[in-house]
Length: 352
Ligand SMILES: Cc1cc2nc3c(=O)[nH]c(=O)nc-3n(C[C@H](O)[C@H](O)[C@H](O)COP(=O)(O)OP(=O)(O)OC[C@H]3O[C@@H](n4cnc5c(N)ncnc54)[C@H](O)[C@@H]3O)c2cc1C
Image (cartoon, rainbow, N blue to C red; front, side):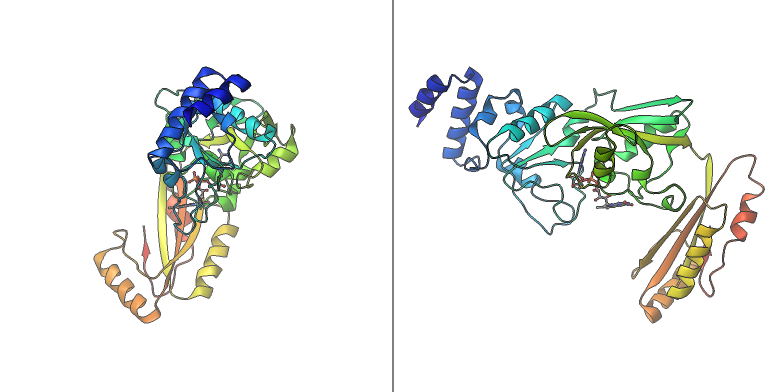
């Protein structure tokens, strides 16, 4: 088998590292450490500079073939752990120029629920590999007279890190997800929804511009003015129109303090009526609704918790409204007044 590779290498004049990698991979396949070489992937991929950052082993492909939902399993041929944006450009250009291009999918934190970040027989790009401790450029906070404050953020960055970095400047993104251990590229490929969306729109409505690697392997900057079709396709595009490598996110002054109210309901009509009321009045900074069949929270007093349990036993479900008002030293005296004007749920606890 090895002699065949050497003949092939002589006739095709591939670089030396390609021959060595090819031999090593073939040996590992023979001893069962790697999956059989996938038909979908041309051997020439091993001649690229990124070859040493491609993983073909069972562990890497298994991780990339599952996600938070655990409903779908699609095994990729390989996983790329890029060390730079150029690595991703090289991979996609290579696929685009192949006679039979293979699929490529970006994977952020893998919190999709139906295999959206998987690439069957293709290559999954593990975006988090770009997020190294040495990467001081992953989140950069700036401002300009025309745009106000903003942060240039790598697509691989987690929102929790965006929050920590921007808070050092007294700033924060205006629109969030509830759970912050998600990547910027991952949520901008969906929508990014939370309790601020009623005021500012989802996260995809709060992006000035992005750098995107297209399906041809071009790295383009896009915004509503430049390459606007790409901009609007990529936002909410589930990774189908390009890979986001940088996004310029809208920032505003971070709230100094917040007052947080939770209201519980067993009547769905009352719950939706009050939710509509809260988003229609001027003053609330965060409004979100949820439902639960199993309420456990230290938010409520022990007395209220037993009331909640008995209501759950009777009705089987509880609806929860959360409303938040930002305030600071200047508005400290008026904040309670604003919250008192919010609806008071009947028969059920209201907790601050
Ligand atoms: C516990 C939990 C809490 C959640 N909370 C919220 C919430 O409060 N609000 C909300 O809106 N959503 C929420 N979600 C849903 C979440 O926003 C999406 O699942 C999101 O896609 C997860 O981001 P991720 O980094 O894990 O992306 P992944 O699951 O890795 O990828 C998601 C999609 O984005 C693509 N993608 C990933 N990175 C890039 C990139 N750089 N460029 C282009 N495409 C890319 C992938 O190919 C895939 O199609 C939650 C999910 C979970 C599991």
